[in-house]
Image (cartoon, rainbow, N blue to C red):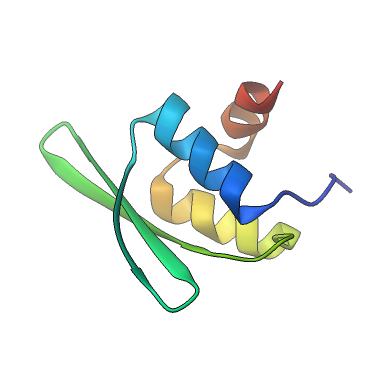
Length: 75
């Protein structure tokens, strides 16, 4: 089982490495967006100190980012 990641780290990696940018925040959820091949991709990241494995997978699925690619960018 992988080490839990903070929401701030996940947002930082998605923005710096995958081209997402901050759109808005409503309560404890942050909306990120990017345009790729004329397609708008939006993901929502809950601002938790530690994201559970399933939550992270859901965020990455919405972002259309493979988990292995995401984990490689963490190193």
